[in-house]
Length: 363
Picture 1 (cartoon, one colour):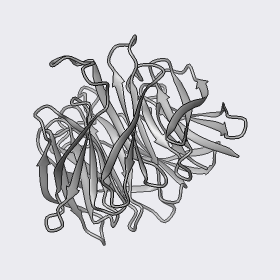
Picture 2 (cartoon, helix red, strand yellow):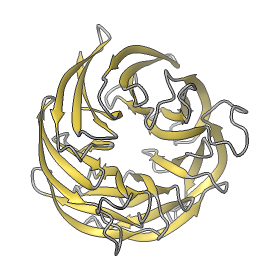
Picture 3 (tube, helix red, strand yellow):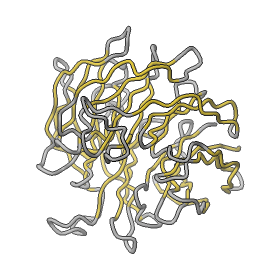
Picture 4 (cartoon, helix red, strand yellow):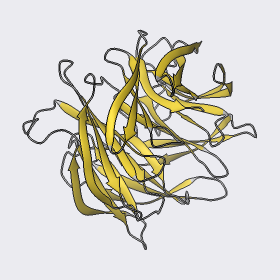
């Protein structure tokens, strides 16, 4: 079977790369490079609920692209990033769009986060009947020192959870079911000072949240409080780099992302190295039916440090395949997950500036 994936870049020139993976021949090839505005490279992208639109975090904008086939991608809209009262879209400020999340339930809004300095507000974008971004309908507040890098909804899309690296917290917002707008509920401080929560994932049972700590290089398990809907740390913490590899105070490694597999029976998380002669790591975890982590299955070194990326992307239709992207050297790889072993089966070099950010599976 043939699969197509789309991948963006960290730096200009802007482009969306469509790659094809043949799961019988176990080969990867470049299907098309779609040129997009030079100054709008997409460092994080996601599909809408129907896979008809791509939404991108595009440096100084959040962007929207129609997708009619793996190689037919057209830009429809872009909206500037916002940060409270400051003009953070100005090129003189280092604030940039970093993450975007598409709602899977009506009204199908798009939720975006700026990052670095003056990233105090998240942004919400309404969409038209075709799923194209239509307006910036709300800028909702976090904290004047916030730095949100990842968000996730609970299974009912009633509550939104945001990982804040800068204030060392996980924020909880409640979503209005009619407008999709957000209201603050509260926050939960990370287990250790300087953990820097970067990424969050929620089990479909709604019972557990998993938070990846960038500086702590750990994966932490949280149970959901049934009354407040705030995540509560269970005390379970798992390493994302080999124990003892990094000495206290060193900033040699930084954890990246965590995602559930298609079956929701496994979690996959990655870390990156800050030195090119070192490798990052992929870890896998077994999850029980209620969502609690049972055990850490493995921790494998990646091909390189991973650069800014080392982003794992499980296939949405099968536990068997996972994509991994790298921007140290510029490549995408496919791994096979079989009998709780992880093996690399395909590799494709794409020597383009800033390639490659996260991969999204189209078909």
